[in-house]
Image 1 (tube, one colour):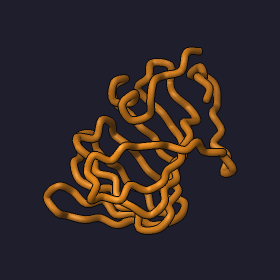
Image 2 (cartoon, one colour):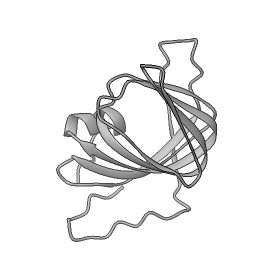
Image 3 (cartoon, one colour):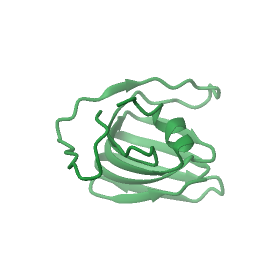
Image 4 (cartoon, rainbow, N blue to C red):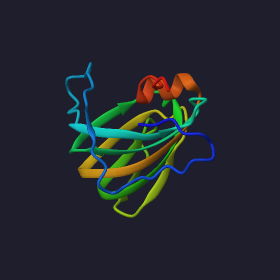
Length: 135
């Protein structure tokens, strides 16, 4: 990943190689999917980031999502289940936003790949994506 000036263009190639993501699962009743991702751009203030994510079938509990995230699903199918029980499903070609503070469940119904854009506090992006690399 590169940190670019505000005047540089960041390409997001379809063939982006992804790094394996390892999550711990405190709730052993939930199957955590195997995931991979790559942050391709992170703005120098740490408030805005863009990347690619891919995950296999399984569930990711979400408690107080730390950023606003725009997602564009390139393949697969996912369902977001809010803490009030309401559900929204998305398939390849769909775009959607997960608002900061969302609580519920991300269910990957079939192996899915998305491009994501996150905006929030530096602390929120660090919690979700890891620390900002040093230029």
